[in-house]
Image (tube, rainbow, N blue to C red; front, side, top):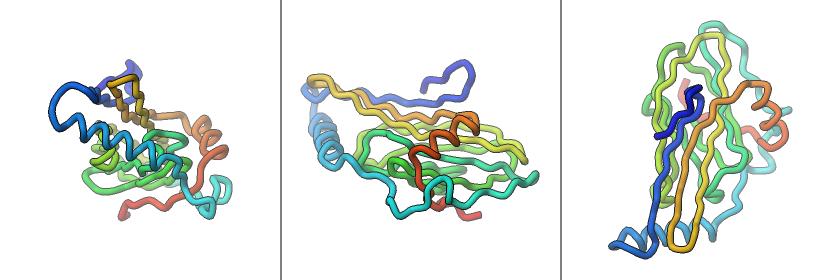
Amino acid sequence: MRRCPCERFWAAEADASLVDGGNDDYANLASIVICCALSGCVTSAEAPSFASAPVPEARSDVAVLYVFRGYAQPTALASHLDIDDKPAASLLNQGFTWLYLKPGTHKFKHYWNLLSGMPTVEFSKALEGGQTYVFQMRGEVLIARADSLSTTAILEMELEEAKEHMASCCRYVPSRAKN
């Protein structure tokens, strides 16, 4: 896992050779072919836009966490975020959600479907009541000749910058968290 000095970026990478090795090579190749063939899924156009989505109530006893995914590969698959080992968000491209979290340190896990071949990112972050946090879900698959590099990442953003991104791309998906 790489972290920038500001500790606002968490990422994991997975390298795969599509030529050398055993059966894993065929699994990696199959994952890439499937992902490319199914690319292009986005959040439903019928979902509320950022401007018309429900807005979280400002409260001092909880933190608000926005999670969004503008464009991330593999495009055909949902990316998932678990918080404290419980499902919190499952987003396709151009989706966002928000949820309330109790103040304190929480364990986060950003992952994809097992067949995607994408790595998982796990990290912990302390959240304060009355504050708003924003995570952008990211994913990238680079294929060069017989090798691939897959990256999964979470970028923490400032709220105002994130609002601009979400307003230009994203539609609301209710959180999977059980509050």
